[in-house]
Image (cartoon, rainbow, N blue to C red; front, top):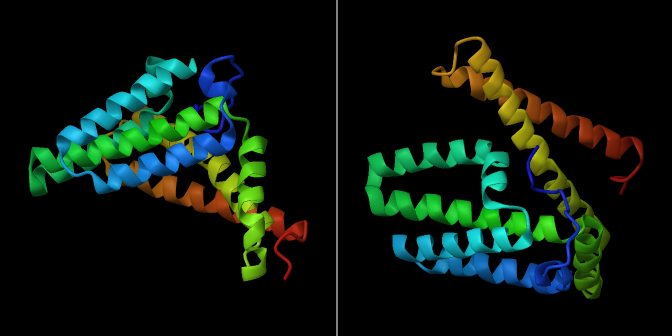
Amino acid sequence: MSMLGLHRPGSTLLHRAPAGAKLLGLLVAGVLTLVLRGPISSVVVLACAALLVAWSGAGVRITLRALRGILLMAAALGAYQLWQQGWPRALESVGDLLALVLLATVLTVTTPVDEVLDTVTRALRPLGRLGVDADGVALAFALTIRAIPTTIGIANETRDAALARGLQRDPRARLTPLVIRVVAHARATGDALHARGIDDG
């Protein structure tokens, strides 16, 4: 199971910090990651993210093991970028991706999901006059957070099934079942929401 979406109680400064401050920090880090270019900045941000993971009490090694599905995706992305644009671009792309994933993990490990959702709802409520549905956005945010560990879990199960059949080198043996199961899960979630009348109107 992925660390994403799983809150771990603790007494660190990261745990005690307000959810709003951590969300703002994640937003700023995301913007900086996109603005700052080059492999050096990516490595620096990735190192900072790894330190925050260690500080949060999640543990870098445990977190990396839990995120092995994303690590495989990052390796594939890095190989493609290396082939197409060289090692600096590959290192930048992989570093940015892993840094953002680790920073999001720090948020979810140190902050209960309900607290994050309450913060998002309060922040968006003044925009209700402009037609923004704060509760709807918060629901979408919650579904996204909770879908991440599910998707990673499906990816890991698909990989294990391919390995058991000796098809680890066949990308279709992983990709096709993964897409089918993820889409099926999304449809089941949508049907459950519809059955409760959440999406009415």
